[in-house]
Structure formats: C-alpha cells, structure tokens
Length: 287
Image (cartoon, rainbow, N blue to C red; front, side, top):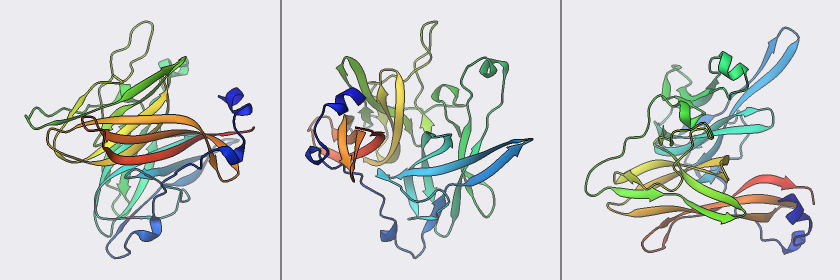
C-alpha cells in the first residue's frame, strides 16, 4: 500500500474523506446522558505505564473528543464502538448501550488472566464494559476483546419475518472483507479453528435479525487480519435483506494522505443505501 501511494496521485488530486463526525454540539442538552473514556497512569516498581479507554463511534458516526471528555448522548438505544489503547494500537469492540437520561457512563477496561498459554506467545483476552459512574454498576456487561473468547454468542431468531444481514469481500491479490462481528453487543459465533488456523468469523454468512432497532458491529480487514471495527444502529425491517459494503484506498484528510476503509449498508435486493458511506482513516501515509 505504501509503494502504491508513493507513485499514486498528488494530494490535491485525491478525494477528501467523508469522516461523518458525531455532532456533539447538536445533541440536546436537556435530559441527555453522557459517556466518556478513562485514563490512568499505572506503575509497578520502576516501570510506568498508562491505560486509556475511549469511545470511537456512536451510531455510525466517528467520535473525535478527548478520551476523558463527557460526550452527550440522547436517551434510548445506541450502537457504540468502545475500546482501549495498547501503546499506539487501538483495540475496538462494538456494543449496544440503552442510555437513560441524566446518567453518566464510563468505558472501563479490565485485564484478563495471565496464563501459561499467553506467556508462551498466545494473545491474552482483556475485557471492556460500560459502567454507571454514580453506582459502579455495569450497564454493558464485560465483553472480551477476542471473538473466540466470548462467554456466550448471538442467538438468531427463528420467526418467519426475520431479516438477514451479511458481509462481503473483494479479491485483488489480497482478500479484503467487511463482515458482521456483533449484534447488540453479542459476538457472532466464529468458525472453529484447526491446526492450520485460529477460529475466525464466517465472513459472508447471512445472519437472521428480528425486526426493530439493533446495534450492528462491523469488522473489516485484509486477508485474515482485522484492521478495525465500526458500529451502526440499524432499524431492521421485516423480511429485509441487508449487506455490508465497503471500499478502500487513499484519500485526503486535511493536508495528508491516508489509507482509508469506506463502509456502508445496502438493501441487498434493491441496492438502496440504507446507511450512507463513512470513510474510516486507518493509516497516515508518508509520501
């Protein structure tokens, strides 16, 4: 990607990215709730480190406030992308929050147990939750940052009027994908691993959804690697069929070139855009 960018179009020839930023100032001040990340410095003996959680998106719009800023959010159901930092890397998880007026919510991260397996180079699962600041009660229960380590999985409805949603892929040397990873804060059960591969999502499976509002978590990436995630609040219509569409490429953000992933949702039968395109910046390019 970097080599392509080096000989690609000039900055002024690139299309500007549509970041679709969450409109903080447009949320009515009356009766709203707030949500925020958290930041703390930690130290063990002579080692110092920090831990930070964040809110990355709300209802399909990118959230750009500071980690510990109080973000206004209207009462009712929301699809929220929460996460935490590991050095310069973000670990995102899409969840559902049913916000209550006047409540203050905080994103909390908890380290999972250290075992012999993860000491020997296996990834360790950590956990995220959203808590009520006043009571400490978890309003979004702890959810693992690893799909394969979930305590329970999304259960599909069986009613005749159920809708479906599926991901999509494109092959161009590498395989690019966008797929459903959570529904209402519950992971979609991954395909089992083998001696050659770890458990991984069933990227193009059609998942059944009951009509009504649902928080849809979308994962995206190249080959078997997840580059990121996003969160949509989708008003599911009876017997509808939805598909997650995507594009990727280099776009202009300010005076910089960025590699971006573009996501949107379509009605699979009609091709109508159900949720408009959002460009997600993934990597700033040096050329």
